[in-house]
Length: 349
Image (cartoon, rainbow, N blue to C red; front, side, top):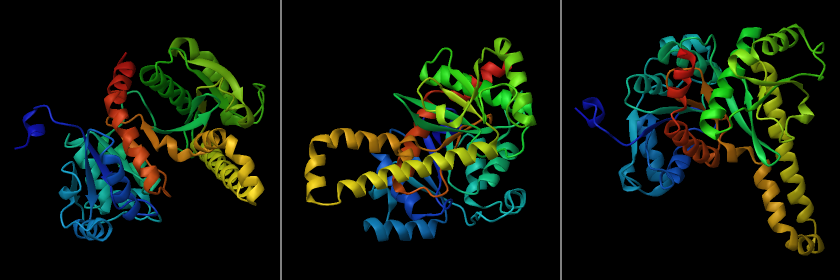
């Protein structure tokens, strides 16, 4: 019996789906190795032990992962849920997949947070069915953190619920408000509804009805609703939370990421154009590097899965080692801030 089973204090355990994502398991492993010296927690790589050990020897020349760090461990899972699989069937039939095993470890209290870059639908299904929703929440939602002018912006939902009802968007706003208040210390975070115009008559039926529900319930639920927000105004620094259904939110998220890549690539290409542009850029390098850092979505980690009983983080499907590194660090803070416990307390009220 280990310390955790005896109920004794034990250092935090971050469960990482080593087989999930477009670049798995290479990026997952390399990201974990980079992150381990920057965090206090243990990291368990959940996946095919034989494959992970082969990769460890290939990348680092070590037979045993503990030689890299005693806080890096492997937990064997023989199967992998692929991106193309039907979520419900995958969760039901692949019981020894890295994702399902990770969820069971989390539910049983053998880990403190689970990270996966795998199939988003399967992650939503597994988190809801295996870990369970917080009482009072109809649908959990992915909350991504994006850069904003001298601030940060939380986008919810950014991909987990493509078909929503107004009550879902109201609860997204409520969950994001609770998280921002307890984690970032923003007492009254501003909440906007993503729309094609600022007038309350604009938008499709879902957005119009959601607007009216948010307007009606904001005072009762302590939501600082500021109305409709167009995409171009979302990053002004005046907004803390942007609410959308998962379909719209995901399109918005990926468009923003694409623009960030375009700005960084174009800036780099123009600086390296010739010797004169390179010399001319030298005095401005601190500002240029600051802009590149601000535009890099990888700096902000994965998306928090708000609304389930245990901490779950969805990493980008295309995550590289840098993004896994930041996501692991973010997950540690997610647990330290007791975000889920505080969410449960608020909804119990």
